[in-house]
Image (cartoon, rainbow, N blue to C red; front, side, top):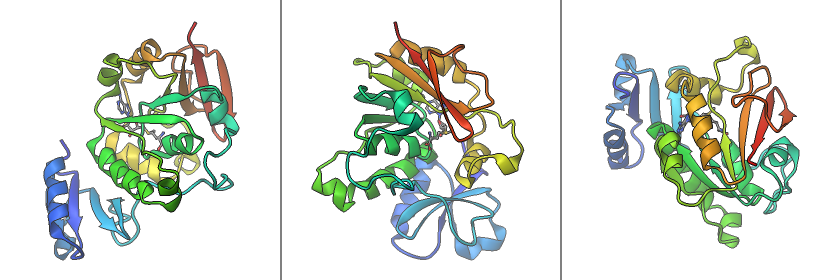
Length: 254
Ligand SMILES: C[S@@+](CC[C@H](N)C(=O)[O-])C[C@H]1O[C@@H](n2cnc3c(N)ncnc32)[C@H](O)[C@@H]1O
């Protein structure tokens, strides 16, 4: 699936076996930094600074992107954080259970988790699922999480279009943040993390189908995050809340 595009990179530190296992799970080659000059892949996964990181060729020399488990700037550091801001308004203060059907880097899921929502995650890219699993494992080790005995959001790897169809208990809210084709110039586009995600996975061209399935499967509402200049995914929403360069469209069920 990712042959020629992605490799796992062993940089000579730690147990080689876990790199090998990761490469086998994703069915991609395991490369070594001694082959640095001959690496032909565009993306790499490796553990750096105790985190599983995704690198493109620009990040190969240093850095890398991992699931960020730290609270956002200005977010209260005790649990649960207040349900404030456009995302909480859209998801609803009375909402308890949320399925994030497009988890990606997990930033919205983790924001909702820290606000005390009961979040379950779906992600179809096995690469992102590996990065999320690493992030959730790191979060589970945090003092505050252990002290409060919080369980990590369950992560289901697969296509939400299939997984939402076979739900037995509808969640109060289904949250969607698929990739929209960029309209703005690159400079105005999102952070590196979203740029690399698009480069790696491309646009989510089946988002209309995902929306219809989500609307069927949700108990009370579907929330769609989109760029503020994009057409609403499901037609006229019941209500909308605006954030910086983005919009949360809410579709309430009758
Ligand atoms: C824009 S990113 C989401 C970013 C995320 N909200 C965050 O805070 O990091 C979109 C993600 O949704 C995933 N995705 C899109 N359609 C999906 C589907 N039908 N089933 C499961 N995952 C899907 C993509 O693989 C991608 O990782």
